[in-house]
Amino acid sequence: MIEVRAVELRLVSLPLVRPFRTSFGEESTKDAILLRVETAEGGHGWGECVASPTPRYSSEFNDAAWLTVREYLIPSLFRAGPIEPGGLAAVTSWIRGHPMAKAALEMAVLDADLRSEGRSLASFLGAVRDRVPCGVSVGIAGTVEALVEEVSGYVEAGYRRVKLKIEPGWDVGPVTTAREAFPEVPLSVDANAAYRLSDLPVFEALDPLDLMMIEQPLGHDDLVEHAELQRRIDTPVCLDESIRSAADARAALELGSCRIINIKQGRVGGLLEARRVHDVAVDRGAPVWCGGMLETGVGRAANLALAALPGFTLPGDTSASDRYFAEDLTEPFVLGDDGTMAVPQGSGLGVEPDPHRLAATTIRSERLEA
Ligand code: SMG
Ligand code: MG
Image (cartoon, rainbow, N blue to C red; front, side, top):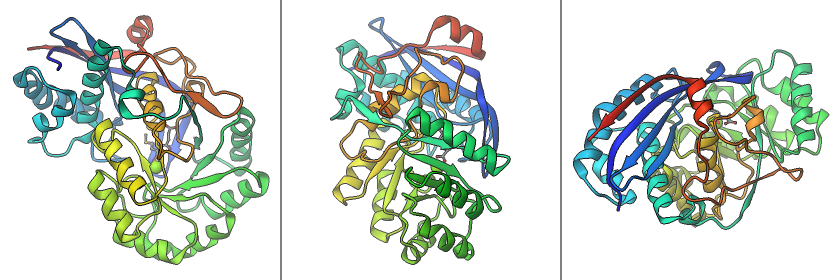
């Protein structure tokens, strides 16, 4: 049981080592809300919200998440008194939507609870490995030369899979060039919902390139047209944005909308729902992998714990700290020469943000008490 008595909200901004461009825009800083909960017993826990500054990847965005946490989630949590972390969803279920805000709070509550028990998040979730294979996500580059150079660096670093962001006008050409330059490297593409079913010729042209998957090619909330596309191409479709719950995962796999699922705990409302998505996929024989939202070390620790579950059989977007930041908030996560990263084994998340780094990166903070 855990009783939260105070919560600190904090918006941090970290410069990215290189701007990250997707089909929906470019980011040159990582702006994230961090939550620190304090318990009646004097413990604490951290959570990171994966929302972005603008509602492009999903309808959530930082200012909205901040308000959701402050006005609705925290008052509900304070009113609930002592709860099991698994009971948080019931306490906040009256609040429709806002999965990223809910996930951040659940992460903090789980971290506090597991710290007090001296148990790691990985062990609590059911991890079966202590290192996980890592991939990297490469933004839309200015030129194919720049793309090949960037991919070379990641391949040399040891990443086990390279995902290329695509959009109309940056697809078959650059992906074919990358395939020719790196014939042996496991490659995938991610469109972030930038295409329509009428773009079938693009996917037919990508089909012979031996891609591991095509991620979220069509509408962000579509399942039916993805099923139609999957019937027409051999390359597995992977869904990201379209999977917001275990129920969505079940629907997608039964409809044939995808053969692979990208699991992001924030997108599905938390680590516990993420585990349920994993379980649905394992039951149906579909591989899953851990997605990324350019998390700081706090959220990265949670992703690595999740990626250690048995069904996460494909490399995730769980890259090393130096792929994102010159200086992370926590001790940096480092890629091993074999392209794997260690799953944190300490209590809870197993990491703690550095107070000096926090002070240097915080642009807004607020404290709420029961
Ligand atoms: O964390 O390395 C990372 C980024 C992985 O490509 C990545 N994420 O659609 O999968 C995705 C995108 C969403 C980024 S939105 C900020
Ligand atoms: Mg994606």
